[in-house]
Image (cartoon, one colour):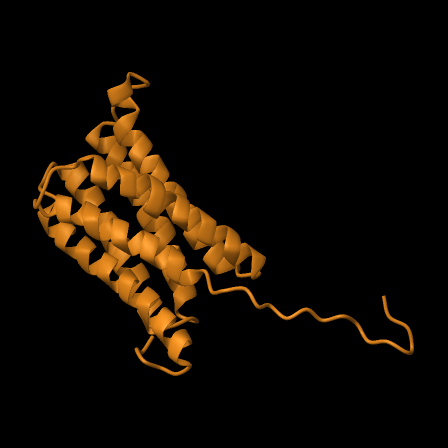
Length: 191
């Protein structure tokens, strides 16, 4: 409320940038899952735990923090991909616990295709943000479609694994660039 003698109270946003948290949660988990897809080790509890806590919960937290900053793109991206990781772990673990049938390769192909479609649409939002996020989202859309194709066709996920490692590293880079640029107060790494 204002009157002639006072001005409106303006509160500056002094909260931290949550994007590096979300990007690292996504990037690190994506790298580790895709090292599995590339054939370096079996899918084990390390990947599942990363999916729950780092890819899942850390990204959902980042999404909530982006909401506080009124960033619809960041809120949607981090929250959706956080829940992607949680749903992926559930798809893998629930059947082993006797809580439903395992998804067929066709169903998994559909699941991954829908995520590819969502990611492709989100990619267009990055065209107004920065090149680093354009690389992350474009490589992620390609990854989802490569993984879907592998499920539909019954072929190896090795090539998709290598593309996924690149995608995860690109998100890792985008996070570290934002952190270092803020810490040093100048462009240390280009975005």
